[in-house]
Length: 442
Image 1 (cartoon, rainbow, N blue to C red):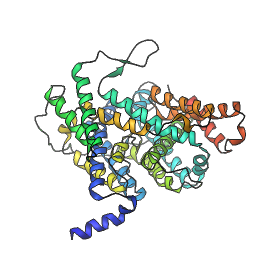
Image 2 (cartoon, helix red, strand yellow; image 1 turned 30 degrees about the vertical axis):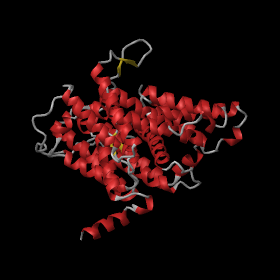
Image 3 (cartoon, helix red, strand yellow; image 1 turned 45 degrees about the horizontal axis):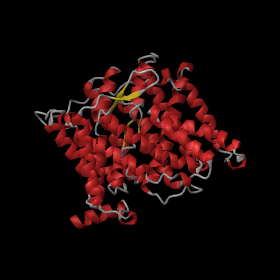
Image 4 (cartoon, rainbow, N blue to C red; image 1 turned 90 degrees about the horizontal axis):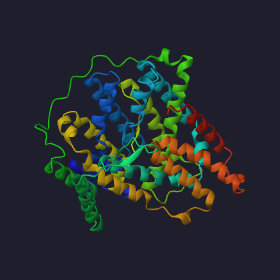
């Protein structure tokens, strides 16, 4: 019986065809989950700030993550985890609802409408024209920029870099505590030794070693209990005001959600796809990208129904891909762990954020590894890549970074006398970038 089950799993996910094995896929799923499980704690706190009950916020987070990740596993057969976007949750709670005072129910309605529109946009096939028009310099820069961004997140979680208030600075290097630096370096050493010796599970070993040091040094207290029954599910699904989302004042919000998720999806999917398959070159008909794009749009539409802000593909999926995750079985493992997490909230809440820091920095390094100035044909591509990557990192926003690169590219190409090399459909992406940067609520 066991042989039949494993044989079915191998066939269903085409594991041999992608040069992987079940053990590797399970290890990759565990690595990805450890890298992003902070969302189970952080997202409910942000949703609670918007007025959702604690139990509802927790279930909204887990349900949206499980649904999207299962869809990625069984439909797209890709090792990408889906969960509520960090950044968009804060944008909704603290800017749209908190500062601009849009009604929460109408915001959720706008999110749902934008998700439906994005799904229709992808099903119509229009998205293909935009993807085909993206030059190699931008698609490669997405991988590199996300690599820098993940490395930045690693240092941020280690508290080596914290939010600052200095004039002209969004971040600064804090007064570094020796123990934080020691744990970060210890994680590097463990991961590095495992990688050099080609021992499987390098990232998990680094994460667990860093967590053990964090508990041993008192940075985080060991929880008194690791297991607890989840809170009772809320009785009524959150109210979604579709009619309130269709008034003229909400049109910019719908457009913002649509464009923000479009740009986030393009950057994340193309970046991770190229990371997982370095030999991949953008095909004339990018059919391989259609399913992950569609999963992102459907997850975006479903997440407000569950009570959460936009869910989409997490760039931390690169952690599991580095451990060899190549199929939807990796995503399935992540989804199952999300389900189990409801019974281990005390343990997840106490798990030190610093534990994943070294792993994220190493992943960032690996995503930047293919970066060579010689791979850029001229200054116009070099400048485009620089604008995209640096803006993505310093604004801490993948969408703003990609849209800035999209706007810079035609300017530099025209200056270089290469206007004819700009794909006609690319100008549609430029128009989207202009609108996005104009309406984004900075």
